[in-house]
Image 1 (cartoon, rainbow, N blue to C red):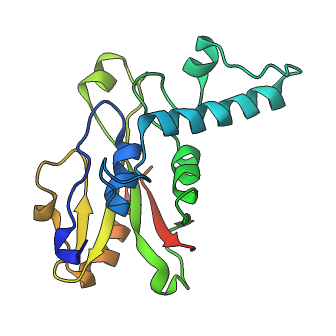
Image 2 (image 1 turned 60 degrees about the horizontal axis):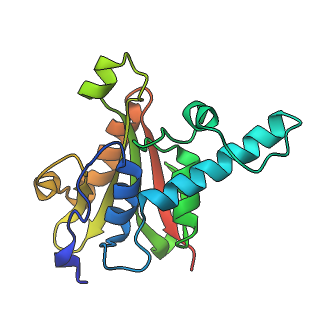
Length: 189
């Protein structure tokens, strides 16, 4: 794939924006063997929830009940809405580590940025926040366009292309909004 081919690989469905952010960041399509899936992130979320359950109780049970999954801090059953820890574990499996932004000494290994912002949706409004209200998306470098925002909720992400000199100002603006999180994604392989 060339830099001219950078595109949104996954478009938004349910609350699977963490899956979409990984695939968009790394430009993984459904044909790629390393593509992120809902099943993979569900498995990571369940694993983290199980470890937390075992640490907080004397239970050594190796299974999660539906109640455990609903109470999980790492995902919402059926919908997604994955935590930072789930996104981090899925990226680490692909040789990418997250670093809080701003950070230094990233060298030539910077893959892009992953951003977590507050998000409003009809489902969130109807359930008074029960189903979350966060959204993950990626920003990746492009030789011709500078930086490109790959947001699975947006139909035409190319319209959000940022010139390379604007990326730091953009990240500062995003990070200045209360609750927004910015992470630099660095390849370690």
